[in-house]
Image (cartoon, rainbow, N blue to C red; front, side, top):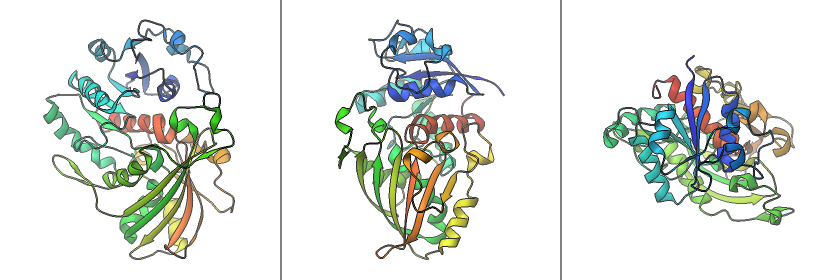
Length: 360
């Protein structure tokens, strides 16, 4: 397998650090460029993250001595040094949109963790096991941008990773109508740790800015229809959410309620979850979990601390499936928000794009 030269823009932040860690021992990807703000430009990566490295493992040796580029002014040099980049920049939305398009127009594919382009109609927002066919819209995007290889693809919000994959294999088969979700989201979703956010210790905050809108609308693009030039969001199911910040370091949990046109039995649901495989499993992508959905029969599972790292943090844990008095069923689902929900999900998307020939 060819090794792809990879860059990370926004490499000094929490998600950028996760990208750097994941690329370190990746069988396909080799880190050849890191970029950040002008404050860090010109420093070695090891010096740039000194005193603010937030990963459990040390700074990879392969990254320590890389000289940090300016994400905004060194686009041409970065494009020459890589086959594609991961984007994890912390900027205003319109600035991110312009920056990512600048990389794409420099013929550098962008796989983004950011939300800026999630609602651009010809930018695929992909969970590889759920809607891999949406990457075909890249050809229309390239025509709009006037590029040969450059494009932008994005992963979806971390809040929807726990429940959209679990509902997906049931959606069309049984006519998913209404969904209510309460998410209980870890502090790393805000790029924080307990050391940097002591107010979260022994605390719950019942509001996360912008998260409920994303959680209600992004699944409809994920489940949308691909046309020759864009992705048209679905109209159903109707989704309502509440998103709550809880005192957990990593792991987003969803309490999910769902109604169907033709409700399946509990045994059918569990069997479908057990057997479900997506394109990522068919292609045996390096970061893909072997068993995507794990169902626990124990009444007190899944638990954030025990189950967030299933299959290297890339699997979804499910439990407590039971009938509901207002909806047909309710269940609990859990995903690791900085792995499956952020950098790991973007790495898996990049693997899909490489395997399907969109990144050369």
